[in-house]
Length: 299
Image 1 (cartoon, rainbow, N blue to C red):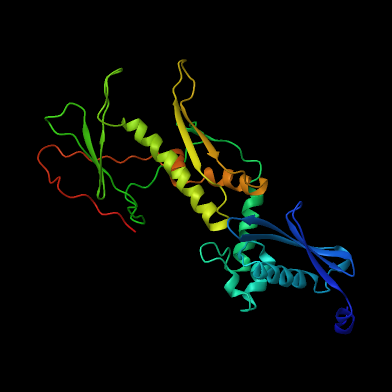
Image 2 (cartoon, rainbow, N blue to C red):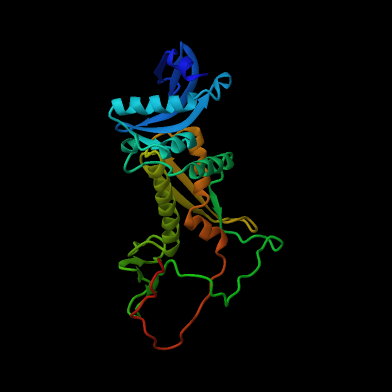
């Protein structure tokens, strides 16, 4: 279509709220659309741009994005750029930089947006929420780590101190944070959670924090995130021990993003630690030793 022909075309943008998409029509014919999600208070996550096949290579996608951005500006809204075409469009102009939401701007370049889209596609169909405590079979075990390896860094530290005057009440410390672990007899109150419960709390909190980081970066619509973890121990010989994790979102998210969140759940740091960090290297000091310092955590 030439510039003269385009000048004679009447363009109209409508908001199809039922389909959650802005639609561009030329002379009454639907030619392109942009899917979005309207988030609180007036933020629009721009998800995906499409063009009717018969109208491709006619500047429809660019016109659709431009008209949508103009409409959002007129509404006083902000934009989270998820669609790779929108990200590319914004990178080539400064006229709409003020529309990017300061907390949730979306992706910074097209490559990042397309990579995230591929990751979402790869994550579909993943629905397992149990973390196994069992070692893999002999055939599936990985090569034992090199105990002398130096290409590593310390990412977290913790210390437990059980004074001689205490029974089982143990002071636990991580950085400047101090807590108490206990292992009371059944039916008696404890001074704090048991070590196993701390492990379960680590998995639950890590899961919630990771999902919140994902939701904040993209849409900020997941609402409250609640994670429950239960430890299942078998009563029959040969059965597997496992942790069962239940995640609840107080606000419903789109199916595509829900599948991405399922995939992310299986890659949270503590999940991976439980599944793959089998090597526990132990040093025992027999006799008095310096217990006043804790190794620093690498950044």
